[in-house]
Structure formats: structure tokens, C-alpha cells
Length: 248
Image 1 (cartoon, helix red, strand yellow):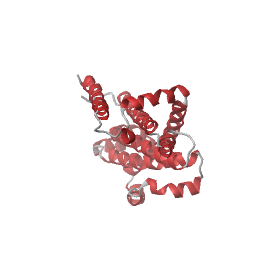
Image 2 (cartoon, one colour):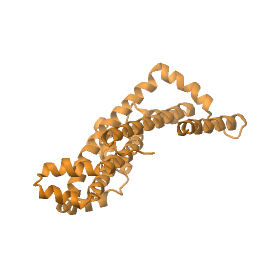
Image 3 (cartoon, one colour):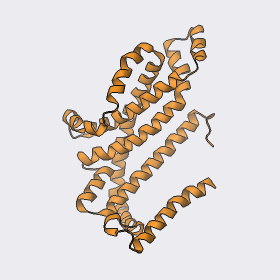
């Protein structure tokens, strides 16, 4: 039943959009229509242009996501386990987190240039904050009795990380990873719009320049599909790692 609703709700929205376009309630010069977008989608797909640009964006998102999330998990666990580390780093994170990551784009381009590094770093820095904050919160929410038991049994620093902090914080870590993936998709479009010659964001900007509304919507739909696929992948990974945490 839930699957049927999940399929029917977007289809209903598309049918209403198409009907509004045919009846003249929607200006197709600005908002187009699903049928016109579909007509422009297949040539982009057959020519390979859409596949190539999507692949470029996917690689950038994965690299930036890993570059931001892995150190964030390690640092977040350290902040959760050590009051000294938390006191030293948490104020800096609190002070720099509110800075819009897009506002840092000129500085990032000056430092890293127009190559791939600047785009990956832009994604990484956006993912980093969301994952590190959630990881630290996950460790701090672990029942203190588990930490005391580990200490009484002479657990090493490595044991605290691998057998106490990481398993206990995993639900919050995955929450941060899901938020980080959404941020990664937002930032990749911004990065590709400003300094790129390929990618879904570059396609959106090129379509805007050419006033090709259908191609722009095709790229936007591709981006939404990517977001859905990445969300499913993270959900699948969460079910593998946390089999006891089943959502209804």
C-alpha cells in the first residue's frame, strides 16, 4: 500500500502539471510541461551527454562525501569521548558552522583553483559539519554505564572507539550521513555552476544561459533521482549495519 502511494503521488502531480500546461494555467515558456521535458530527455540520454555529466557529478559527490564524512566521524567520536578535545574544538565548530558554505566558494577557488579539488573540498566541508555534530551527539548520548564497564575491564583507547563509541553512536552517525548527502548534492550544483565544464550543475547553468527550459528541468529531475538513489543506498547500508533498527 505504501509503495503504491509512493508511486501514485508523484504521478498525480505530473498529471496535474501536464493538464495545467494544456489548459493554459501554466506558461510553458517558463515552466514547460512533463511531455516537453520527456521529449528533450531522451535525446540527451541517447547522445550520452546526460549520462556523462551525471557520472562526473556522481564521482565528485562520492569523493567529497567520503573526504568530509570519514574525518568527521573520527573527530566526532574523539569529541564525544574526550572532554578536553570537545572543549578545544567545539567552539571552533560552533563559530564556523553558520558560515554559508557557498560564501566560501571564492576563497576555495583562490586556494585550490578551478580543478576537481575545489569542488571536492566544497562538498567535503559541507558534509563535515553535519556528520561531526551528529557523531559527537551520538557518543554523548551513550549510556554512561557502558563507558564505565569498558573502563573497569581495562579497555584500551582503541576499544573505546571500536566497541563502545562507534556502535553506540551509529544511529546518529547515519542521521548525519543522510543529512550530509543532501548537502553534498546541493553543493555540487553550486560548485559546478561557478567553475566547471561538465556535471549536472553545469548542465543546469548552460540550459539557463541558452534559455532551454526543458533541458534545465531534465537536469533537475536527474539531480532529484540521484538524491533518491543515494538515500536508498544509505538506508540499505544502515539496515546492514544496524539490523535491529527497523523502521516501520
